[in-house]
Image 1 (tube, rainbow, N blue to C red):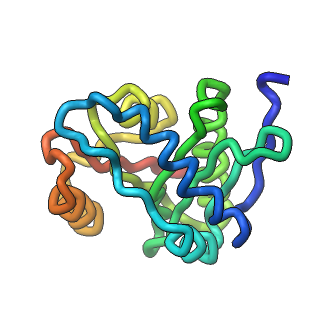
Image 2 (tube, rainbow, N blue to C red):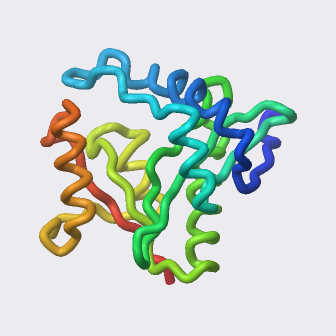
Image 3 (cartoon, rainbow, N blue to C red):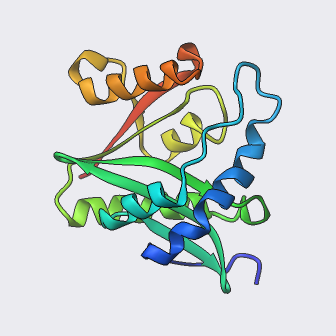
Length: 170
C-alpha cells in the first residue's frame, strides 16, 4: 500500500540507518547554489540524540523510511533534522513526523518546537510554515537560535538563505 506507514519513538538500534537516510535525502540539495552537500551526523551522534527521548522514526513495512531527531532546550524542543528517504518522499511522512513531534512536545510540557532551515527551499521553510511554524525575526530574543545560525554560517552555509523557525504549541 503506497500510503501506509507507521511511526514510533526511535530506539538505539535505529541510529545505524539514520546517516544513510540523511545522505540519500541530501541529494535534494544537489545543484543548489552555495550549498555544499550538508554535513551528515554520525551513528554515534544519532544514538546520543535518541537517548534524549524525543526522536521518532517512520517505517514502510520493515524499512525505515524517515526520522526526526530532536533535543530539549529548556521549554523548547529543537528539531535537529528530519529526513525522509527519496523512495518514500511525498507520502506525508515528513509532515507526520513533525506533527507527531508537536504532540510529543505538547504532552511533555514544552511550549514550542524550534529548528533552523533554508528559507527559500520549498521543502524547508515553506514546508514548516504550512505546519504552523513562523520565522524568528527577532533573533536577539532567541540567543540559542541566533547562536545555532551563527554556527551554521561558520560551517559554510549561506547566512542569507538560513532562518530559524518556531512553532508555538497551544
